[in-house]
Image (cartoon, rainbow, N blue to C red; front, side, top):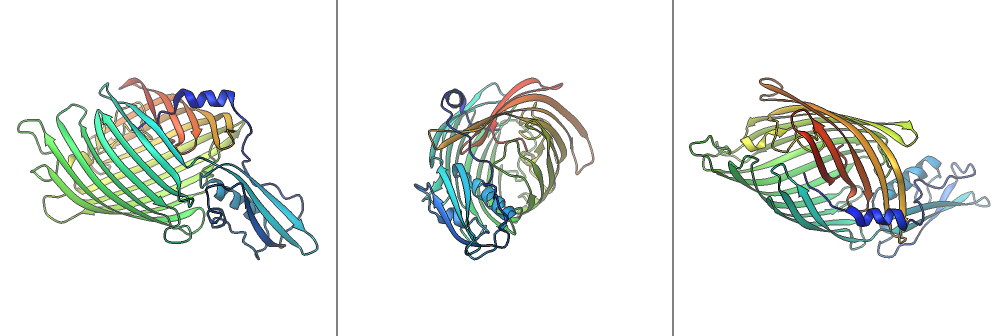
Length: 427
């Protein structure tokens, strides 16, 4: 698990410098202008972002019939680009022509961010480093991430994404990573080199299909005499490619806090590159998340998922229950198996709604109480089985770029109490 240490400086800003809360939706239309035509669209407040970044997200284009519902969906789509700290949408009707003019007024977030990385590990050590991000490269909403980590492991990564590379709602991404790490017991060292491409097609704002080809080389230096090889290749080097297919339907609002709605996803990956001594097989997964509002800024989140790996598999490819988003009170090198089921429940609460600072930076604060549980099998949902569970509480800092910074205090019967710091929701 990685960590994005945003820490005391941001919390101090929350306490001292708030100016105003961003609008969480489009301005409500006071009249009934259904079927009036949209005459014009205007963007205000843009400094470094091209207006096409907003206009390409909109269904209400000039000449189209006006709809309150579609206007709200358009506003949500603009917010979910994560480029703007504040958004206000106004509709100006002209009864003489039965037309409306729509204005999007925004306050841009900063394009660049650099921050330190500090991660506690299960071996009572630390991973430290830095990250440099640009979420609006060229003013076109392109994302660039550079990251370096040192200490308990050594890792370098590069990520680039263009949200409209192949046209309307067809993002393309490119990821490169090299990582060197030791197993939890120190028996072997693994060097992982990976290149991954990604293409997604959105049928609408909620439904997508993605294709993810990848290439990977894994070298394992085993320090145990006469031990069983960790890799499929007895020489300690596995080279293989993969092709993944993802289908997802997401009815939640990414920008809302706490999130509401449902996420359903299914994935299937085939891996292999020829040769009887290289890994080859299939990996599959199903996941479902539901977020139900309970009133008073409370949302109940429920999540369940199942994963399996079949075929000629190397030992390092096993699934683990003890990861972020699974059983949080457990280490990343605990509870391995070839198939698993895990579920989580979170009660999420808004402590401080998003506030705008310095006109361009917005933050919010939330809290969660959670319960995790899961089963892992030595075979494909059969064979030796192990159950694990944990409970805990945590804080969530909603911030630009990283979106969610997290600090969790988790407890399980097998591992006791653990503090985990990282980035992103558990689901």
